[in-house]
Length: 396
Ligand SMILES: [Zn+2]
Image (cartoon, rainbow, N blue to C red; front, side):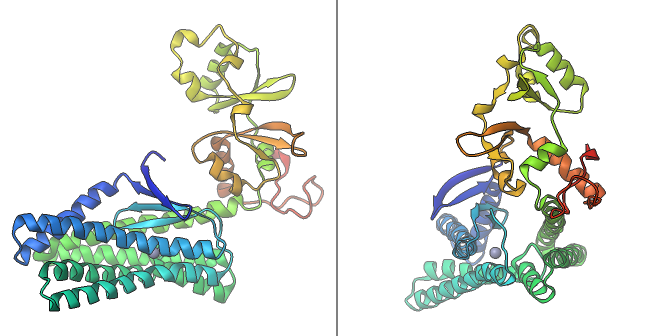
């Protein structure tokens, strides 16, 4: 995603910042500054204090996220990276958490570390205050309160907040049904979001002095509502894809093919009128490459005819390949940047190319499955009996 910039990595965990985060960093710095000016500091030292304070604030957020990430790694969950955005961050898990107690531990350690940080900053503030180091005491004191607020806010029981995930782990543990737990926690997240927005609106209407706080509550509430909704959608997509292999994806949604020596003009016409944005290119019945809409769109008008498609296509050996038996959820990461995947079969070293799958095909299969639901194949069909998720071929 072009929205994020990688700033470094630690213990194999990449740290990225979302573009929007820069605005938030400035906003946090500014509010620290106005807070220090408000308690009586001159403008210039207040700037320095605000910069240090904001840096320590973001360090605190990072520590919170790293606590999640390291605990996840410790429990065998693969961590993709940490992205800082808005006031917090997200730790992306590349593999699923498989037990409720793991989800509980991985989640609870975040707010716990914020509360520990609050205590540490509180102690620093107390002792530096006694030693007459006012500046240190004021910066540390503010950070102590903010970390406490961060820890407590995150414990509110609505997903995707940590409190919601803890709730999810508990419901999961009691019912044994992860899907039900996900939906329940996301719904409480929506209720929580509605409550935050309502309080924000009331504050805006009846407490003009706290109008800014009201606006913040509304923004955070709206963000939460959106995140809770996408949590539900994400889960539904995960369910729709569960157990589906790359090879099956290829069967369910095959690309239109074109021979390698066909004129580019034919491909242009095909992509102009057809629903597809990519074509598989074949030679002697074997897939040798893939031609993407974007490829052609980038070519100047006069070069879109007169040459064979093989000159413009992405050859298969330039693409990442994956065995047809691999689960699609594992192949997703390879596809994340929009690249097609070559699907192979057979022993390593002697693979046969079965075809190409694109993110667009994956998208179509997900959408169809979500809209129609997964059908159980009738017993007489060719579907393997041990795989109720396998659709009859007529699905195309
Ligand atoms: Zn957290």
